[in-house]
Image 1 (cartoon, rainbow, N blue to C red):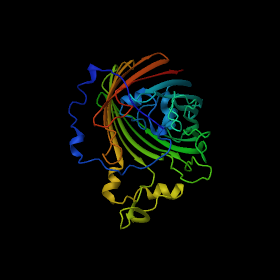
Image 2 (cartoon, one colour; image 1 turned 90 degrees about the vertical axis):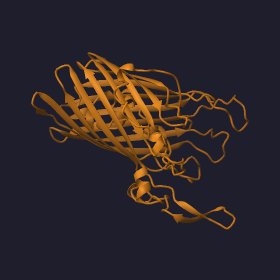
Image 3 (cartoon, helix red, strand yellow; image 1 turned 180 degrees about the vertical axis):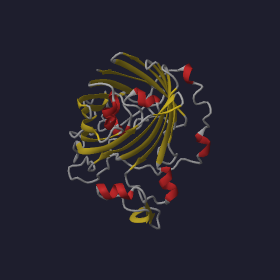
Image 4 (cartoon, one colour; image 1 turned 45 degrees about the vertical axis):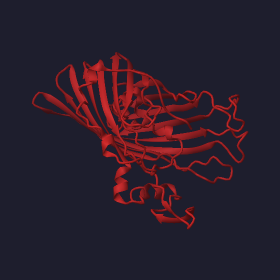
Length: 387
């Protein structure tokens, strides 16, 4: 599938927030080839503008209608009985046709401690070239989509857990043209937890939060009728820490940090024969052709270059959010990923507006590397209603 690119937005009010950040690009030596291969990567892309403004952080941020995306357990702490949201994110590449991701979450409170929720997510290519005939007259339009249902419950006054069930459909190959091909399908499970408390220091209220999420746990996807060449789902772990600082009745500042790791086996390094051709014999690392549970466990220790490479597989994000009277919001953040593992380094800025039940958020991503990424330089909007 083809993803990523776009336009222009600047939020002057936020420029002071992250001027102290250094250029992480100077820490990298040269680009590597140790990226982990996954199917349907759109499942790990943040679909809402608030999270994008916070550098993708969503595990530990305060609950909103879009909590369904990563951590539905936050819904038990939301102020509302019912909510629905919509976002449509444009991704552009100058030499390709535009791609759009549509996302619509919804939740309903069963009682004070239980919430049901769900969402629809779709990634759509408007038009794609027919590479079999090298023409642009193909009527085939790739489509990836997923449907989620989740249940969340408070286990104590300050802690809740949630579980999500996901159906995944990936139609990225024109089966009428490509032999032995089919639509990729799979199912996935998410498990999430959220802890929120508050305490007072003098006249200030502090509100720490912790979020832990395991997402897209499920069988591999195959696009061939014979079931070969299976590709892992983007099974992922997020651990986030947040701290809210309520200065007074109208002013509050929230700080967030989040660590992220793919729970997918690392590709091994294969031996080469005397002519320099790759063989099937593993020289370093471990076979990544394993089952779901073993693959998750193995992902913590199977890197060919040892613990140092394992650390490179952990991406990080930092963000700040300022709110005035719970009406106007300003946000900014930074996302860092190692040069060998994707190199999606970017700054993020954004703002939000809340009036009664209606909320609107906007965000903009500023690349901090030399790799073209369709999520960079795009403006993202999302709206939500929370009753």
